Length: 150
Image (tube, rainbow, N blue to C red; front, side):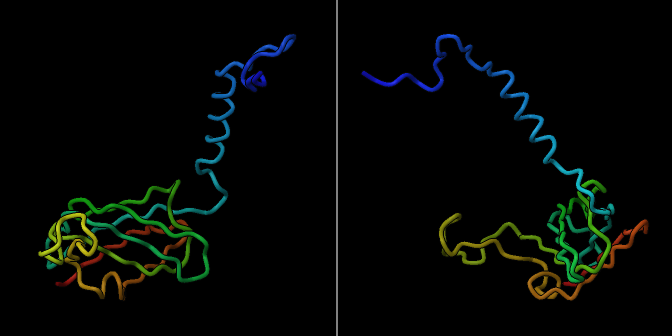
């Protein structure tokens, strides 16, 4: 004889309605989705490469002044934006910008195969060896434009 399923109703005990479990789960998730007490600031700006808006890429802000948060955004048509609710805490950041050419660095490797990597079209001094910095200020404009040279 098999023991009764823990999900089966016991005599004198009604089964838990699935709806109440879902409601509790949603409330827990809602409490965990942002709304922290950090003094976050919206950050935005433009990125150009050789004087032209960068068509697409990624920008990352890595904390360098001891603050616990970093952030990033997608660059589209030369613009990026990090909204205030997920923004950056005031302080110093190392900035890295990347954008792949859409081609494979190893043309003999099949797409998706080990060793096949997207070719970075932004010079290393703006990403892997970034020289870029930004100082986010409380209540400041926090608009950072990055004119990159090839």
